[in-house]
Structure formats: C-alpha cells, structure tokens
Length: 435
Ligand code: AMP
Ligand code: GLY
Image (cartoon, rainbow, N blue to C red; front, side, top):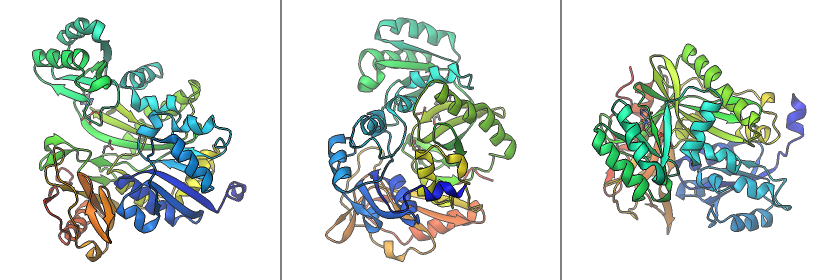
C-alpha cells in the first residue's frame, strides 16, 4: 500500500478555486498536509490570505487559470464551487496539451450535470434505480401538459428550475392555482432566467433531511461524515432560505442501519452508474436526502461540498487531505484509509443584517483575535489596509468541537460573543431540533 505514497508528489503546489467558508476550510486542511509545499487560492478571502496566497484570478476565466497554473508550476487544482465545474474546467484541463497531466479535483462537465441540470439528475437516478421522488419535466411548449400534470398530484407541489439558480430554483407551493401560475412564470416568463426554460415537477416527499458526502475517484469511494445544515434565516427554521446558517456533524439520527441503506441503495449505485455511463468523476458528490419512513430518497445531487457543511465535515477528517486527493487523481482511493474524529463539530454562520436579501458590505470586523478553542472560517470577508472587513452576506463561520452537540454549539456561541461588526446577525438556536 505504501507504494502509493511514494509514487506521489510530496512537494505539491496547489491552486484552490473559490472564495467562501467552504474554501477557507479546504485551505485549512490543505496547508496542514505534509504533501503541501505551497497553496494559492483564487480569489480567496481574508481568511485564506492568512494561511495561503490569494490571487486575483476569476475561477470562470479558464484562460487566466491556465496562465497562472503554468507560470507557477501548479501540481493540482482543487475546485470549491459548482460553477467552474458546470462550465467544464475539468475538460478544459484534460483537453489541453500543457494542462492534461495536472489533476483537477472535481467532476467532468458531464458529471457536473448532476447538479447543473435537475432533469439530467432525475434521468440518472431513474436509469440506475436509485430511490427518488416521481417526476416529469416540461418546457414552454408543454406548459399546459405541466399544468394538467399538477392536477394529478397531491399538494404541496414541488417545482424545480432545471438549471443552476443560485439555490433559489425550487418552489414548494400548497395551492394548485398558484403552482400553475408559477409554472407559467418559470417557463414562459423566465422567472429564473434560462435556468427555468425547463422545469421538473416532483412528488413531495415528507420526512427529515440529511446530507451525505462522498469522495470518489470514479471507481472507488469514501463516505465522509454526515452533516445537517440550517437553511432558514430565522430561528425555529422560519423565514427565507439562505445558503446555510449553521451545521452540525455527525447527524444524530444517521445510525448504522440508515447509513448502510444509504450506502447500498444510493452511494454504490451512484458511483457504479457514473462508471456504467462512462462519466469521468474525480471529486465530491453531495447527496441531499429525505428519509421517508426510514427509507432514504434522493432529492438532489451537488457536485461539490456544501457550505457550511464543509466547515464541520473537513475538520473531522484526520486523514491527510492531499493524500486523499492524490489517491482520487490516480484512482487509488481504495489504498487510503479514512480516519474520522469521533467528536461532534458544530458551526454557526455569522451574517450581515438583511441577508439573504439586501445587505451592506465593508464593515470592519473586530474581536477575531480573541477567539479561543474554536476555528474561525472566513466566508464573505476581505483584507483592507490591514483590517478585515465584511464582503458578503455570509461573513464568518465559527466551528467548534465538543463531546456532544450542546458543548460544541456553546463554544461557538461563546466565541461569537467576542466578535463585532455593524449589523451582525446569527441564529441563536442552531441545534434546537437535536436531542
Ligand atoms: P434542492 O435545491 O433540490 O435542495 O431543494 C431545496 C429544498 O427543497 C430541499 O432542501 C428540500 O427541503 C426541498 N425539497 C426539494 N425537493 C423536495 C421534494 N421532492 N419533496 C419535499 N421537499 C423537497
Ligand atoms: N448548505 C447547502 C449547500 O451548500 O448547498
């Protein structure tokens, strides 16, 4: 097994793409790796700049990425967000004579369709017999059929824009006429732009949600720790949906029996399905599940890690992350064992007042140096003349470990009390539903 490590570069220069809390958590693990020589982050944030080197390159500017990679002898590219993947950064590297031997951690453009197109994902699920909600899909030409299909379903109605809609493309509506109106808005009036030129209508699944994270090399896979995020802005899970206001790992109800079902019915057939369909996939799969009467069903695939779930999942992974990524690149993931910290991790997201609607930026953040016994992951921050200022809606995630939820969550709140910026807001009830 140790032939594996010796074959790999232990002097790696890594380029990480992205700028959120997820990427700061990746950077935190990458710089701890014994294989890491140097880490660049494009474009990064004030947190990544403290532990790595930020560069002013847009992850969607593939030509700019190429120039930087060649000029700086980058030996691996790690992709945080879905956008560059859906736009085909993996294929761009693979098809370029100068870049083709530099591994990209993230799926091919076709693989990224699991997130980039809800219809593609549904077809994949059905084809490979993976449990999911019944569905049909419609376009402007078939809008009336879509309205008729809604009449055959029980409320609530689930409408999903086919394409990427920044997490906003899913509508759950109780009233039939309102659902029909929204379907027309999506298909005929581009409610979500081109993302809603096709709409998937899905059976509503009632149950508890759980996120499962998988790292695959396309042949082998590792199931990473489970996590649960808190999506709503308001306490008691009320108000608008956000990117996520906090997360915990592991998820208490994800017991051995449930995890076994998830692995055999969902994870295995997903990885086997990718192989059968000849889809190049070397990266993360984030599987959104609803547990209906003890049975896991897939509601979505994402082709990246979740944010803020990464801020609790990665700190619990004790295996060297670049060793894992190197094994992904060489399709030898079966040669590496995954060590997980058994403690609980919790993260609380601190946001700018007004988020997820309008909010202001540029507020100085104070108290960061007083945080003890928690990890501060920057999300929307940037450095400004030696100060750290807010630069996004979700600003900072404070992650803590504990022997149980209550302990981990309490530590994060104690440290958040030391932080301040104008219009700072956070949910005070993360973990309220856990026993
Ligand atoms: P998605 O963007 O696909 O994760 O959907 C956003 C949210 O909508 C999910 O986190 C679920 O809470 C909910 N959702 C999506 N699909 C369904 C479904 N078929 N039944 C019930 N809730 C759903
Ligand atoms: N926290 C949910 C997501 O990253 O999509």
